[in-house]
Figure (tube, rainbow, N blue to C red):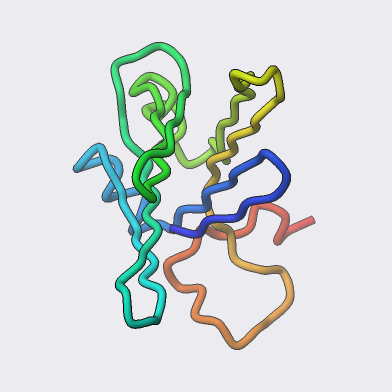
Length: 124
């Protein structure tokens, strides 16, 4: 699962294996271990929930994004690319969340893309 952040937004991209793990285990977690004498890390998770809305929290170096099972069920279908939500922070700012399938690039590159989804724009 890839994570991209920028100015009050988070985007998660999941390959085929990641989506299958979500479908079967209802949770996917990744951890980044940083070098140094003191062990430090950052974790992020996508978690299925019975709650009706997409939500998130950040506690003890762990970003958790909660997605309703109803939203996830629709997303597992091949034609669904992703889902998103906008959350208003306690300070009144907007925070955007986007979760999407990770597609193969249109131009060749040196990265293994065998576990990525076929790009829907491949046959324009």
